[in-house]
Image (cartoon, rainbow, N blue to C red; front, side, top):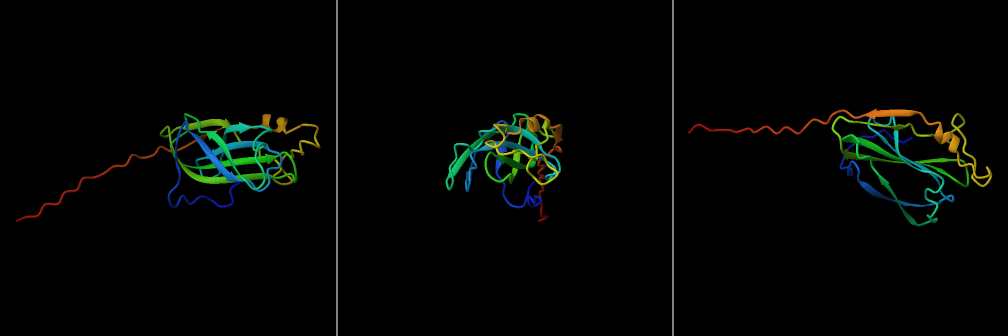
Length: 174
């Protein structure tokens, strides 16, 4: 879903488990909203867990060419560690597409914890993925059957080793 594997090089945003974050994005075309899934991966994008959904109305109040803020709340039991945060969006109107926006982050949460939820729906992501039709063409069907069929999943983050500082003293003989 993300174009490139994470390198986790450089400084990354640090978020606390349970924190509400105001995600800001530039909107090129808002497609009359759609359905969004906020997901996390702790294994460099191999497995993902959905921690927040917003069906049908996600970004529906956005406007083309403007900045839009979409809040999300990290789970209070989110594991600590390096993670990839991903917003997946299936639009209501226009070409049948799936948009994905990834960011390397650091989560301060439960050390060595796990997070359970559902695997994300990858719809409109090629010929072998489910198709969610345009909401106006489908008589209002926004893909609810596909979202309801997502499989349960648990992702686990390895325990983060505590920083151990060694005290080294050097004495010189006089």
